Image 1 (spheres, rainbow, N blue to C red):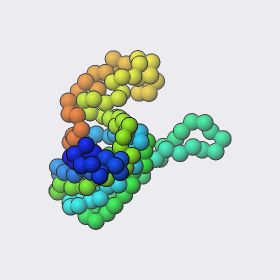
Image 2 (cartoon, rainbow, N blue to C red; image 1 turned 180 degrees about the vertical axis):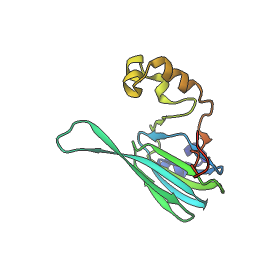
Image 3 (tube, one colour; image 1 turned 90 degrees about the vertical axis):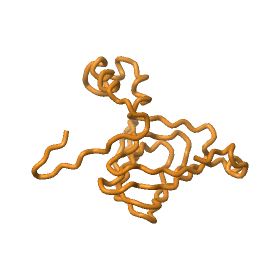
Length: 165
């Protein structure tokens, strides 16, 4: 990864550039950034992205989310605004390679919603119970099973004669 401090021009532009190679059948843990506008360019391979898009219903104070998703192929470009949780998944038969441009990188925080260092581990007991409709102990037990930090096995595809776990 090329960091702002590695190249003065990037620091002046307040941006970072990175390359990501997601192994076939794998995905990144869901995450969102607080400030960054991210432009992702698919270099090679295929896969899928899923993003939660926040919106407000008129007259309702609570924020709702809708899922935005698409298949990914080489040459595709998409933009991820700040505060939009994102997942990138590689297809079962090839890696997914992307070039990532992040603008307004200074002061950004990346919150992981899954994986070993996910933000949910910091929720208070009542918040865990309200969010997941179960005991905080059960939530902690499930979160404790996640040993990977950023990449993990992707969702298993269902076939007619097989079941996914």
